[in-house]
Image (cartoon, rainbow over all chains, first blue to last red; front, side):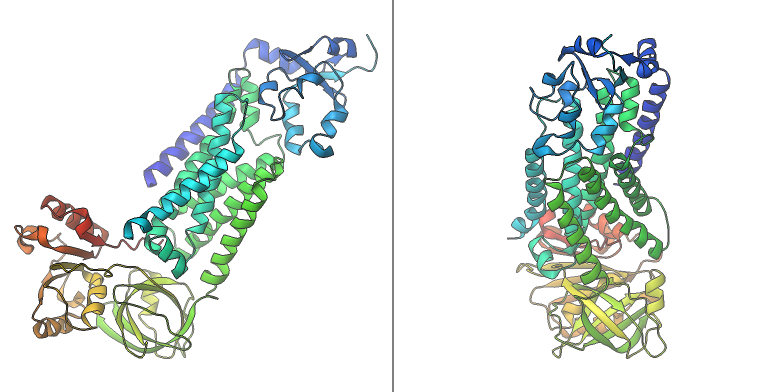
Length: 122
Length: 416
């Protein structure tokens, strides 16, 4: 068991270091996406991304691209896709039995932010 | 019956883990994410069982096949849970890797996160340091105890991590159970609330660095049979100042008036301190535990004792003549280490069925071939008690001479 402990711990830290190193050398497409988080997105632009495969959602003034997260969402399969292309702050704040999403969900959401919802129509 | 007792812990682990995974099994997620979540729940279940297995209650030990067995499984479940819980965040991060390396790192990284993820990381780091104290570091017992206690806090933080993630069912009942087990162990076992009060009656030096201590009950006495061990903590006497730590000691005699004796060899700081104990010192006792010499079949017996390992055999011999032809091989380092040798020779002279072979082996491993009859060993029921290396060598030797594992009985006494 001593050897199991030592090997498991070593491999764990090596893989953590590998994930960190991987995040430093991003492919060009991912790098530009990361820079674009501050971009202003209009409601019209938001509405164009209303399918499960291309799903943007506005929550509390920010716009998130949830296309990649959709299959991982723990709710019923038809709940989240119905909010694609829309402003969903109220739905986000009142999930099952009126409860808001957890702090963890808030933190998870940040990773999918692609811009800020513009107030005008353009 | 013994077979059933041996199955109770594996069945408990299987039932607890399978039901938790069944309840929490995620649907419509990717294979990697599903695996990451399942490993987290499996680790959680194993940690809960591990907490149960550290309780020192005689009735629980009887259900679960003995305290020694509980401790072996406590170590196994704890280490396996640790490995599964290390894999849990790595697999969740790996799931995000094909889509985004940045997201993969953000899933794993504790930076720019809040308490839901920090509590998970803190839990893992506490488990890591607690197990490092067990497996790697050579540290004083007191420091080891605190780091080991940190493992319990690590388990609770892991459950807090789940609660902060918004998973209240079935985490809150599990959290309540984990707190109950930790509190039970701390209050009833470590603080000695469930232990029975005794007082030291006499102290006798029986060999170099070995004393035999008699303990008189101050309340309802514990029922003890030869071959069993008890957990004893010594407190204060007139001059002696005990440390109040519970350590296991094998009983060397049980008298009709419920006075018991234990032999203590100076193997560490605490047991060396006990060498200077005096009559009148207060003690508390948990137990008795163990089934080492219980249910012996009506067959010729081979008993092999190494050093202080003679104690369970001595306790049995002190109760009267043996009921089967019995060969006792007593190995010790030098003549000054041969505790109770004179008494054993007297007992062997008085008992027709008991033959005693005593030998000083020095620092070398004994030549088992010259000491044991190689032809007829398969007919013996073998009982071994001594240092782990000696027991391991004997098991291998006996196995090579057609003695089946069912005929070999031993206890490891790995309690730390």
